[in-house]
Image (cartoon, rainbow, N blue to C red):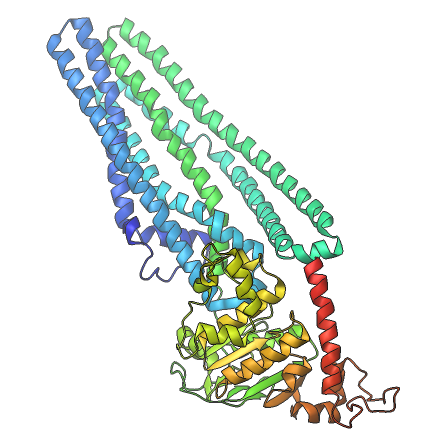
Length: 620
């Protein structure tokens, strides 16, 4: 697999039983790249270790005044230089390829899991942990995977050098063969503590990342209530904890590095001291002593990879464990069986858990007193079953939606939550979504009342075309109402069989909300639409209204009928007490002065309330 071939057509099914198993699985998925890196690493390290032999021959040739030997030594050193350069170049190339492909495979797996889980992911895993896994952890995982082949090449080279020295000069070779394991394993007792300190550092860094993510996401609200200083202090304390943990970890790794320098130095002293005695006794030549000395000195280079693999594993292990934990999350399925695996052509949308029915082709409005419960129910209707799991699956045309293939489920039902995300790019890219093409972008924008948004984008565009205007990350350059309307237009362009909207007009004024209600009803004529709202303007234009209370359907009917007959419904929509006491002017809470339902008055009240919310948001 080459970098130019990324992304993978299929990243595979990972082994997520543990972090170590996930790392092993990644390494096995790119055995070809690992073998190539191992071969080039052997060439590079062997060429490096061939230099002492050439230097020893050259020194001995000078002592013996042998021109032939000196020429042979020069040729050997030149050949070793070519091997060093070529091997190092290709080793770096293959190592980087292994690193990037392992990281890319992990990112693809995470992206696939995120798409499968949807918004339930951040309820099952902290947002900061998701950010940490998809950024820094991916790099550390790739580092360990590519470092394995270089470590194996270095270890094999050390073994070959020790064996060669035993044959070349047995007296000194035995000393080296005994000293090298001590150098390689001398830092082993320190690794458990170094690993624990690295784990602590990663844990604190993850908490700091989560705090930063939450602070940025709620910055507008924090500024509105004057709470940014409080959260800034919290993040400052968290970052200082990360700094202290990093310093403690760095001290331990500095000690390990110092031992990696000290132990080879002691071995060099022992070799020189013993070798000088052997030369004085005439048992070895000067050239042989130089060869062994140079070999021991250069052995420190491949030995460095023992330290690197220990660091790579220590830093990648918690990263792999977090990645495995995210990848192990499964898309929950309900307990109702149907024609699983076969996407229905059409049909009613029904939730057995609550009794909610959205008939095919109608606009159904759902009123919940609890906004959080409404959000969870909206996600269930879209095949994103929230916690707790084990609830019966939502049915579409009698087929269990949670048991459909993910692609089919997403094609049939689209859920727009109350806080939709706008990705950075242009307006044209924002509206370029998988769709039936039955709804044009112009019609969707008009239905969502995006005229003023287009004017603002046209002013920001270089050529005056709003389609080419840049939209910043999460649409932060737009107001809350503008973001909400663009997200609604994007959902309308997608034109799914079933569209579920959770409070789609909560950030707009009453006049705009009335026009949006009419536009959505006209554009979605004959298509199944479910709107979670308490807005009288939207409720009055729905074909049927469903009141859900404490997880079950309590009443079904028209908006005006429910407003008149259901005290709990009236309390949610008009914010009045459930007992239905008459208003001070003698009219019932559900009646206006003309004897008709109080929808118009409630709409005016809702419009004033929404306008106040907008002013607060814009001020924030």
